[in-house]
Length: 124
Image (cartoon, rainbow, N blue to C red; front, side, top):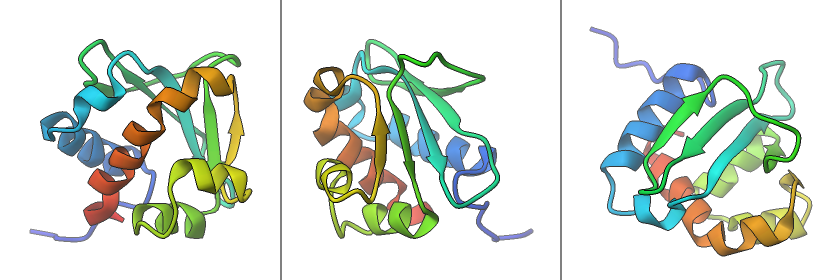
């Protein structure tokens, strides 16, 4: 039996993180967030689309639309976020995370996105 971790931001990695998220006590913090994409900017992999429902339960989706929030960062910066070196808001302000979308739609959820990074920490 292999104990090797899946590659960061791979489908298998997201499945582990989202299962942990859905079982965590943090899920409500992203209730009704909707659809967003996450991408490792210095990798050839496509963005991963994640949808949060009315209860904050998350699942991967195949694609989204241009008006959905989109987050991209280098692998090193995603790892730094998950390690707690900075939060999502500061990551965007310091240009460590590239954000595309409506700021007003995302601002109420920055605490939830930081909680997602904490939940993802053991898998990074």
